Length: 145
Image 1 (cartoon, rainbow, N blue to C red):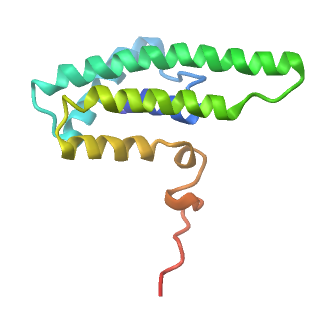
Image 2: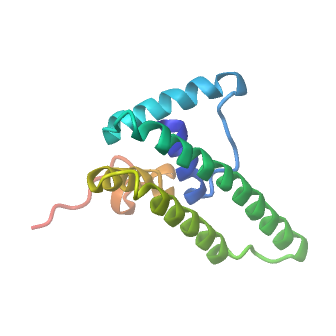
Image 3: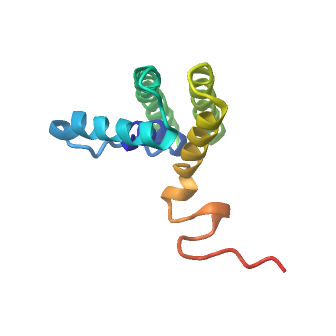
């Protein structure tokens, strides 16, 4: 589950620039992550291959998108400008929405909600030492009251 969700979520964060899973263990790692996702989403036996197929296809698209983003950075560097981060964000949002659209007919409402929560948990704020609400890890928001 983790490989699939992380792979999908990495493109949201722009952290898809490096795959740290060693190639020899990649298949086993991906299988374990898919098993974890199946458990977290309570996938049926019929849903498992459908979800895996969708996420693998989206991962392939994410890799192609990564190449586009890398090219945007290189073009900006060559021209002495900054990359258009709004364009990068739009690419990420487009792929995120496409993934949800493809999963919608496969997952029930509860499963889809759980998947969207998992995607949010792998959003950039969570990978850069910030938890919910942008608070640094380990810090809780001030109590309301």
